[in-house]
Length: 438
Image (cartoon, rainbow, N blue to C red; front, top):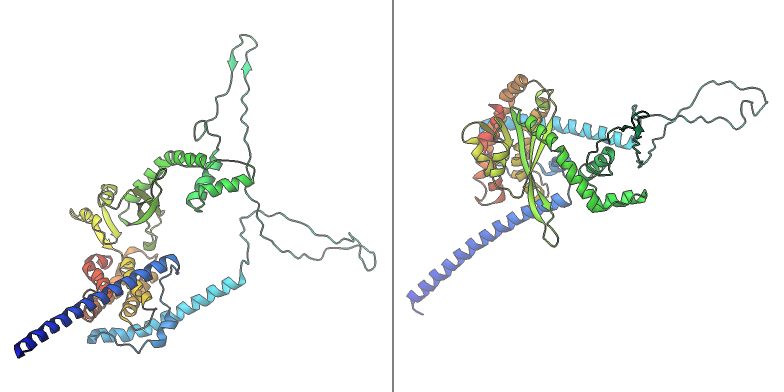
């Protein structure tokens, strides 16, 4: 081969190596993303729902991993955070010990509101002393209590309406038939309530309810129970509408959605619907108004659904960054407040995939966000003006340092890595995430 041919071959091979390196880089990023997704799915199916940091385990290697470079202000704040972290860990450990002590002791005091049935246990010898045969007098009592349970039972209510005839004109008089929740239905209000609570609060399938009732000698078909549930839902629709009006009358609500499996008809495949959840709960700010949750169902996750649900709402909506909410913010009628729990969860998934190793960027981010959560826990239930004062004096500085830390950390990771995406989510929604300190 001539020198020119060798140079051309070398250039071709160099290009091939460069392309291979780029492909490898993309493949590694893809693997990293898939690992995060697998860790998330495993946690959702098998793991604990808690997202608390295991402080005792994480501190074992706390100082062995390089951290992003800090500005002088950040470094000074980090020293203060170390002291706060030690205090928080101590209080957490003390709380954990108290919970463990309560768990070991079990049920000590049975609820006072439960009815009591007293059983007297007297000596078999009656009122005479077994030793000398003389009479006995009471000098005290030993009282112990046992928690027992009587299973629910069926009973039949017989409605009797006598027919009365006038002795003079033979006119017949009879009381009107009592109303029923569902026309021509044998189920009373108590049974209907039990079916609904069992299905929706205790998550007991209707077929299993049929089995439970069958053990009591009451044979009911699953289709019958399903019909009762549907008709009871129609009866309760005015109550659901009233709850919706109450929730939307608040100045601030929380919004979210979750997938739900919906069964198809005979032979049809199950499909995925959505449950939209809107929550009114101002107890953290000391409000005495009752909390409430309003549920709405849709067959898909199109943005038209929350827009329709909240068309009459005016106030602050705290939700994730779902694009379907954006039309609500355009005219200023609804103010966006992003949810820190959603932002934190993206970092937590990475932290779990990294086996909860201390000192990683994900761990550091979680610790910093945890400081913000700690302040919120301290002021929970305080009046709004006190909460705002604490947030402006303490939380605002924490958030400023956190944003600077995010900017520094983002420059140290690949732009397409899960960590970059998690940080990018927070930075792209920073205004909405920090709305609560305005």
